[in-house]
Length: 359
Ligand code: PMP
Image 1 (cartoon, rainbow, N blue to C red):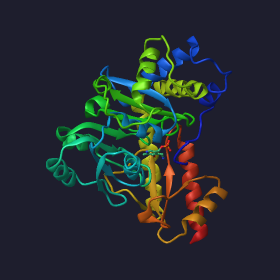
Image 2: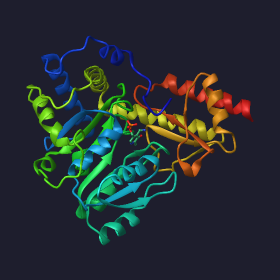
Image 3: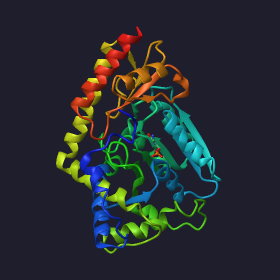
Image 4: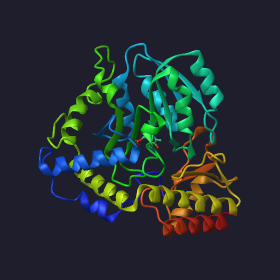
């Protein structure tokens, strides 16, 4: 019950264990097309967006949005925790100006602070995190996007911990970019950075760009267009096995149905949170901001290191807390990907047994 890579699915793992195939082979090209179509479906991207699958991970997908920045651009970072903060760490490496609004652990940046900020300034780009994995907070991104839309040319949503387990709808939200990674709620192995990008952004070639070479999405756009047209294309060697695994994960997601998949995640989350509160422990995320995929739990004085070790001995691995404001006071439960009711029951049992041993 970790944050990701989430526990695998046999069909998904086996699909990635075939012989290597060439990236120009018809087998690979059709797998890429299926994955690109599936990614667009999971993120609610219509024909106005181009899906991207690049080698790397969530952070590679995050950094690739620098494709659309120029020297001196002003950027607004809305951070609800460690992964929101990662945005400013990325942008600090580029000659751009960053304004940042930060929420307390368990909260999401208040709407009135966002509105104030965008009424005083115009931004080239605003970035936000749908599910903040360090706390389990799910931000109201649709409202946040409408608040910033008028004064921000480009709006980016980090859906690394949400796509595949939460409702995500790039077109309906009016987001320009939604990004994610293969290893979390999509339930495939790590290795792929995933994005859907509004096509009009790609049309505006920029000679004043500040991005690097490998993560310049303009280099990748022609490859993705070629794959979508079943013609293929090359910029840099893709991780073929990870793509075959992801195709299987997306097939399973389609078999399950997207709304049933989101519902399964929501049911796991609420059963876990209820059990946690029944044990006398406290959920980190404020009520109304609790995600389907991640739950942070305050341990009320129990030592998290000892708690996690004992839980592992009792059969279930959880994740350590990483938010500095809650250091030494909490741990995290990942309930995403292929999580089922047996996993939930086992997780609750391990936690209960451990609390019993430690109190
Ligand atoms: N954003 C969020 C919300 C995340 O949870 C993570 C990974 N935990 C990342 C970005 C970074 O992704 P990766 O570790 O795949 O680079």
